[in-house]
Image 1 (cartoon, rainbow, N blue to C red):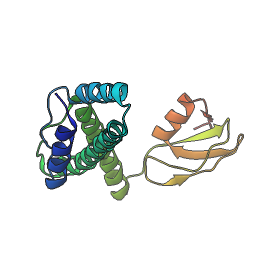
Image 2: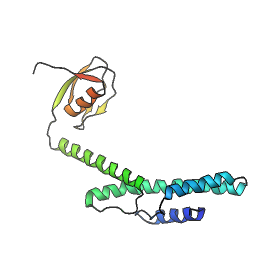
Image 3: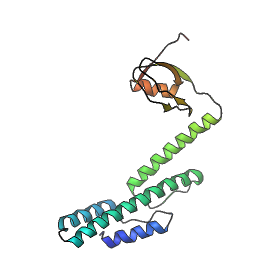
Image 4: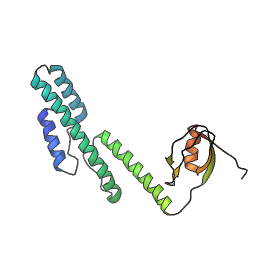
Length: 171
């Protein structure tokens, strides 16, 4: 069962270590139940203070854990060390960060190797702000009716979104 003291203890553990603290099973559900119970009975000033303080402790715990997950993701990519004590929701965040960083690193390596991506010429169907292409180059901004050459992967996405169409230049 979660109490204010439990939250205080977890907060202290999170602050002391670079690793994620072990949380009770069903931590998020138990915190929600605790906060709902406190809200229902928070008539006295001291109960309201404890409720607000508990919400703040929970927020601090989650922000510290998010920061650690970002750092642990970078560590995992470099060393392969798998982090422990993640909740299922945090594991989803971690997995998504790993995919995003590896994708970014692959694009960066491709750009650094001097390898030029395949390109397509597009006619823009709507205004678009400046964006970073798959080759890490800047493109745009474009106005509706403009034509430009962009990396093929970016062109595919822009066509799928209905923002542009491929122009056949007779090649």
